[in-house]
Image 1: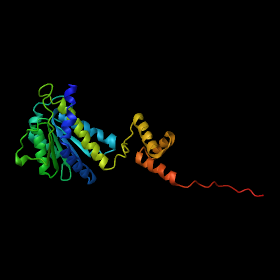
Image 2: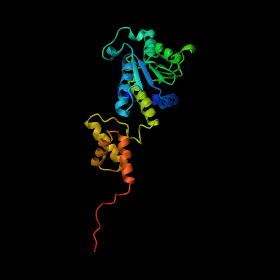
Image 3: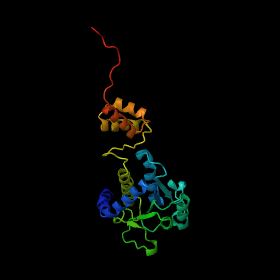
Image 4: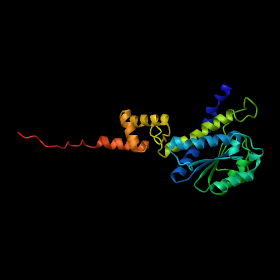
Length: 262
């Protein structure tokens, strides 16, 4: 299994130009107030939900910014919903319900490239002038001209260890590519400095400790000063960094008091 998984990065790299194109469109959408949508069924849909749900805590992104549509709805996250992936009308209806529009980017995820729910969603998204992308793992897929999305990313992963089990290599590759989409798009819109998550949302002890380390690393201050600045800034890392940088540039205050005479 591991030897098969090891083939994935090279296969993804062969799709580099199309992945870069997608990242650029996603970043442009974010800058202009647009959103990123994922749609999928089964493992593909669940991985879209996972990536979307991790953007708010990692990048302090508005939950509307990256959204996922799962064939069969919320219940399908933990149990199969019979026939959900075979209903293109349900895919189109979900796109209408979410209000997908021009300026958004819509990524349909379908390991085989044939999932009817995903195609229904992609067609409706394109009809609404969103940028449409199909992520699949079927490089031999033939698509009618009338259905062509703006971009097809189709790494050739070869057969699965368990024939047809798309939760294996296809699942790993999907996770890697979705990581690339959101991480690099967030980098491009300024939510990362160097390799530091400066828009991290520190909602627990572990993340508050990480926030203090990031502030300390960017300003050269100790942990106590970093925490104090974070507390004064509502635990917003960028604001705390700016506060400490302004303090470092300010001249020292003159002490008040009477001068002693002779």
